[in-house]
Length: 269
Image 1 (spheres, rainbow, N blue to C red):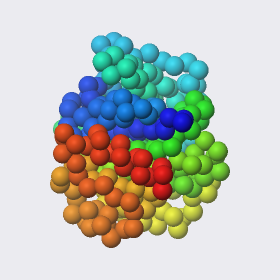
Image 2 (cartoon, rainbow, N blue to C red):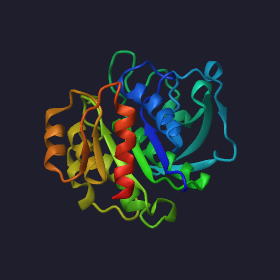
Image 3 (cartoon, rainbow, N blue to C red):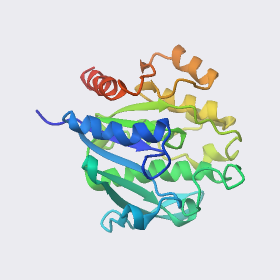
Image 4 (cartoon, rainbow, N blue to C red):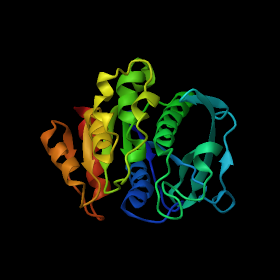
């Protein structure tokens, strides 16, 4: 039987960023499901705080070189890769000088969220999916971690809907306690529009805050996972009122098997 293919798209992965619930899951879950017989690909942004020399990142020339147009501006897409030797696992990094070379992730040194986080989310989501197309790798499951990956579900269901690589892909969105405080750029919903995505699809982003972005991701996902014990109350209520397949919070010692079983349930549904 052919191995199930799982695509992990994560805002943070240890050891490239400090350990927290999201970065830890994004590090050990891919290894765990790979050891249970699945094939994996893992992606994260190449933030400026990721030390290229220490982590032995190198550019993948055959995957780089594409430009993504956001808000009428061309942004070169650079793909880098590193290996976590102990896990026999590669991590692909989405890189761009304009968006990811600053020395912190989503906030500046004073704790102020970057004004272009909306465009960084667009670039990250599209960059991953365009790279997967270049790899000619058809995932059975696309598992998104963190709000920076929140646009992946709508892009899969609306923009890439006719792409045969994603024809059978099921999208899972893991919701974490990673709220941003300041609304994203008011023009966010216009910037992220692509062919197949209508203004009506994005009406929820009239107010582009964390809650509404989370709701958009949930609406276009096939299943939802509660990634942290504590969640934004309004988002948690929205998940419970939706008809999505749902996996509740799993403790550290149980989540790999629980998530792996959940993948099987979704692909067999």
